[in-house]
Image 1 (cartoon, helix red, strand yellow):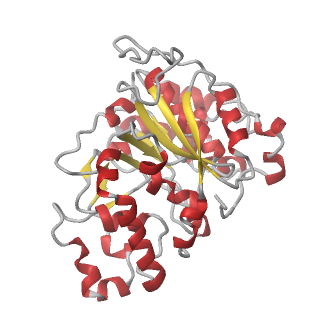
Image 2 (cartoon, rainbow, N blue to C red; image 1 turned 90 degrees about the vertical axis):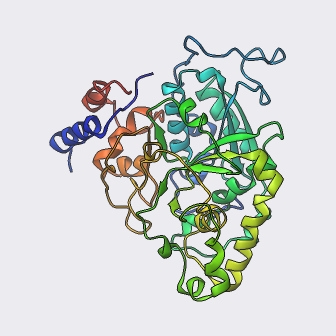
Length: 381
């Protein structure tokens, strides 16, 4: 499958944008869809049906006889992808799934695991119907996340949206997914893939490493923890003995070895840090710091192309940001600004229009028009 090979192509797209465009019991913040409207099936199903993507030449056939319509959850040829699914980020999740399928060489070998909030305005049943109507041939399951497992461990964050219990569902994938699923790619809802996900899936985990992710060692690692953390010798020595320098990594794109995760009970290790946080306030940033405390310095490094993060700006203003230098396989609107919100509100950033061609929401905006034609010309849409 074609993909974006270098930043030069995407830079050309961005330049053209500047010239032709005006510059779970969940805590619900900045709702993207009206809560009353979400429960209306007429509004809920305002997504177009995605194209029926089929396997290319050379894809392994499913070894499951029982499930002739797609891979079973335990099929060894299956690529497993886990995402959360809720009414607030629904539009982003659908676009992300669309992008994964569009660029996959073997889309029929992908199994999606959607974790839904227990008390979301859109029930798990309705969300299941939505996914099925949008992607009729998709292999997937929807799991209900019991938010009482984590609600009492969550502390206040710098942005209220980061306190949503569903943000912590990734901590429990080892418990939620079937035991036969021993590896999974976790993706946030605000990402778009422009490359074949099998390349990410085939990441080799060396030694006893459990997590694979792009690392950003130029970032100021100390800022992810409070002065109280760094002033306590017992806490700041946490990172001693790690295999490499502890670096920041973004938990919105991870390859996870669930067999090692379960065997070493990493969910409990993360929960212990959340308990310490409730007592001592050692960080301000929601679900990310516990992962850093447990894994930083022991992460399998993945090429930066697999997480061009920060496109949503910071956690306060959500300002427009450019791409990092280098090739691109995945675009990630981490931060406050989400492309579907900014587009609808008429304040889109240039890179938001690279998200729009994957948007299947029927009620939003106009036709793709010449902007879609412009990026199609680069061969990755």
